[in-house]
Structures are given as C-alpha cells and as structure tokens.
Length: 350
Image 1 (cartoon, rainbow, N blue to C red):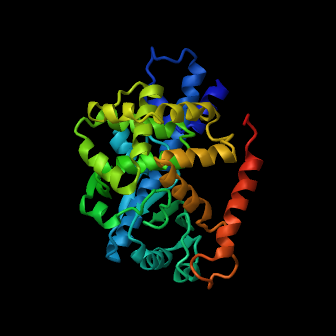
Image 2: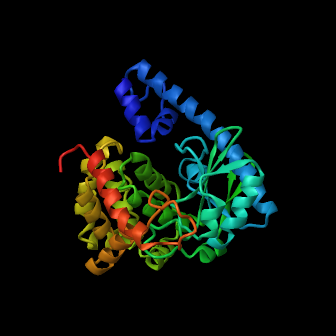
Image 3: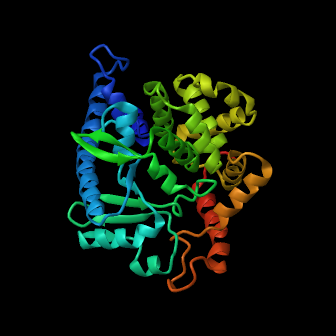
C-alpha cells in the first residue's frame, strides 16, 4: 500500500487517482484509499496557496503593463481535469517576452519576491533555465519563462504570435490569461519530451486534453508544431497517451502518427524508464539518442542535440557575470558537467 501511494505521488497522479475513488472503486484496500485521499488533501492545500500567488503575480505584472500568460500548473489542471487542484504542480509558470524580463524581475522584487537570477546576470543577458522567484513570506515559487529560457523548443518560440491567440481560463471564479488550447498542447508535448516522459502525469495531461476537448483544432496543432519543429514530439505524445492510457489518437492525426516509423521505437524506449518515475533517469548516451531522434531527421537532430549540449544555463555560469552572454568556456564545460551528472545518477541497466 505505501509503495503504491508513494509511486503515485512520484508520478504526480495521486490527486487524480483520489478523485476517482468510489465506495466500490477499483482499490480493494481501505488504507490505500485513505492514503491517496490524504495525499490529495496535502496537494489541494498546496495548490490553493499557489493559485493565490498566481493572481497576486498576475496583478503585479498587469500593474507594470507587462503582457504574460500562465502555462501548465493550474491552467493545465483545469483544462485537463476540470479542477485546479487535481493535477500536481509545485510552482506557477508565466510566459512573457524576453524583452520584458528586466522590468518583470524588478516588479517582483519590489513586491517582496526573492530572485534566484540576479539583476547583474539579467543585465549581462545571461539565459537561465528559468527566472525563479520565491516569496519570502510563504516560500511559494514563481517561474518566469521567455523564448530564450524555453530552449527545448527546437526552434525559438514565437511569443508574440502565441500572445495573439491567447485566451483566458476560469479558476476559482476569476480569469487567468492562458495560451490557446492548441498552443498549450504543443508546449506540453515539448515539455514532456524535455523530461523524457519519465512521469505518468505528463502522459495523463496529454490523454486528458485529447479526451476532454473534441473541439481541438488539430490543423492548428500541426501548424504550430511545424513552426517550432516539434512535429515528432506531438506524435510521440499522442502515441504515449494511446498505448499507456487507452486514449485513441485523434482521427485527424492518426495517419501521420502511423506514418512516422520512429514513433513506436521511441515510445517503447520511454516505457523502459517510465516505471522508475524519474528516480533512475536514462543514461547519457540514451539521452543523447533520444534528443537526436525526437527532432526528426538526422541533420536537424544533430543541430538540436548540439545546441542543447552547448547552451549553458545558470549551473554552467562562471562567477564573472559581466562576461558576454555565452562564453566559449561555459559552453565547453556544459557537456562535461552533464556527463558527470547523469553518470552519477544512472544506476539502471544501460
């Protein structure tokens, strides 16, 4: 029982399982049901606080006249499951234009948030993995993303185009700014690929969106995916949802998913590390091959892998933040740091 609940929490699906419990439900042991409900209660308390931070930060950015949308988190939970507290998340993510990041950081710092990325690094135009802020009173985490931090997009994210199609999602009687459903679907497909689809929560997001939203404009999904070079990432996401959770690939996408011969082998590889819920990540060579194949053809894959391998984040930065945005030393150090990290963390079979 304890192992089942711990695994559900590691996969980020404990809340969803708890919402599906019935007196005659699929779990035969009452202690398991009680443990899932307790995990969901803890998650609900956390998400309630984070939703409050969402609207607090939304107000700060609006007052500074900084356009931004919420991605993933409570917006995705509402879209996928109909409730902001069903899906697991530990922070609130905003997307904005990189040109606005300095003003956004200043506004959040003035409101009492503690930045992980210094103003000096921002002035030097360093590109972190995300701009993280922690509210000193509550410890809540806010992450700001831009077209430069979302480096796992094969091509730069067209933020202004995405903003032209933005919409709102109702959360607790208020409206949160959000990407269009189609643009968010492409984003979560890329996000799942970024994390090697190591947790069921990312697959369940895809499955739930496909199941709940028959109005999805798949022509728009294909166009957006094509514009950012994520066609195969979307196909793999759909095939994972079908193979693991029984949600059929939409008829509009079925032919191209079946025509991409690489999708089935990629999904089978994902299935070998998925049971570990991220605790035993794929080894370095498997990671590199996955990145290479997810991009499409060999040349595009090699370019994608090279860029990811040589684009330093805050973990690679030197102490000299006045150095140019990307120094050759930081770029060359990055692959060696990654090799050490994943050689140390990988314990499973090669």
